[in-house]
Structure formats: structure tokens, C-alpha cells
Image 1 (cartoon, rainbow, N blue to C red):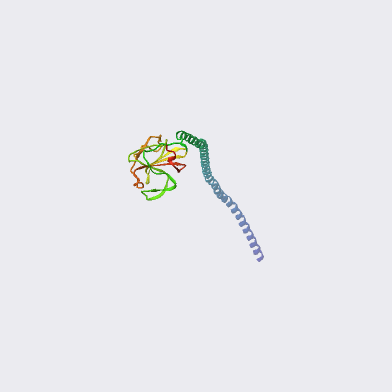
Image 2 (image 1 turned 90 degrees about the vertical axis):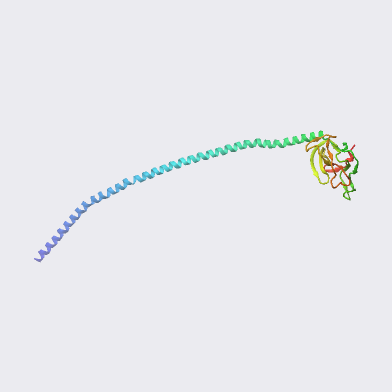
Length: 264
């Protein structure tokens, strides 16, 4: 009896295990398609959703790329245009500089030619030389001689000193004439000689007339010998005791020479 019961129980357990196994396999096969169906739509949905951002990204990148390309083309065109303008400007500047250089080279030559011509004209007009003669610039006596080898006495200054000119006594208002043809280089006022005319005679010679008033010439004037230069003025404080006079000086290369060696 006990043995039969034990066999029955074992058989019953095996049957139940078999049923459970069959039921489990059935449930597994039944549940697997549902999970696949549930999972597939999700994947397909993900697949369908992905292309849209990718397309948008692609479109966006395409637009940006197109814009960048246009900008680069515009920039390259701009650079080419600026380079072209720069090259054109350089070419025009070079063309403009060439005549300017030629002109600059020509100007000194023209200046030299004009200067040479001016010297020639001056030599023709003012041909003063060592053997030239001059006229008395004013009527009167010489009261102070040219003296560069020894000093002479000056009454007003009460001293002995060298004298690079001659002083010709003349009344106030006496006419002062041009002693030799020349060009008025300067009209100035000097403390010692008062109103003074400096004239260029040519060949590095100059004549100076001092103690003047009512000057009749201007700087740049060409004055012939014998023409009026002005009038004798009241003496400056350096010649009060000597009285009214004409201060007359000759220079060669800027150094004084004796006017009496040239006066006829």
C-alpha cells in the first residue's frame, strides 16, 4: 500500500512538472511576439524621427556652407579688387613719379642754365674791374680818408681807428649820384652810417653809400652811373663833429678796397 502511494505521488509530480513546462513554453512563445511588436515600433519610430533632425542639420549645414562660400567668394573678389586698385595705383604713381623725377632732374639744369645766363647778363651789364673808373658820388671834400694800413683820428669818437671807406663832406640835402652802374642789393638803416644803400657792381665788387635820406631807388633796381640815389642826411652820432657827409665804401669779395684808386 505504501509503495503504491509513493509511486502515484511521483507520477503525479512528474505530470505536474510536464504541464508546467508545457505551459511555460506556451507562455514564452505567446509573449515573445508581443515584446517584438512592442519593441519594433519603438525602433521604427526612432528611425523615422532621426531623419528629420539630420535633414534639418544637413539643410542648415548646407545653408551655412553656401553662405560661407558666398562670403569667401565676395571676400576673394574684394581682395582681388583691392589688389587690383593697389596695383593700378602703384602703376599710376610710378608713371607720375617718372615725369616728376625727370622734372626734378631738369630743374637743377634749368636753374644752372638760368644762373649762368644771369651771370652772363650781369657780366655784360656790370663789368666792373680793377681798371674801372667811377665818378664822384657827391660834390665835396674828403674829410676822412681810406686807411687800412694805419689808424686815423676820429674827432667825434676821440680815438684812432682804421677806416675802410672815405667820408666826403657835403651839405644836408645834397644830391648823391650813383658812382658806377650796378644793382641795388639792399637798402637798410645802420646805427653808424644811417640809411645805407648796398649795390652790386659785378665781378665781386660792391659799393656802399651811407648817411642818406629820401632814397630814390629800391632793392632790385638797376641804376646807371650818374643817376640819383638820394640826398645827404644829418650826420649820425658817430659823425657829429665831422658834420654832414656821405659815407662811401668799395668792396671786393667782401673786403674793403680804396675808393680813391677808382675815382676819376
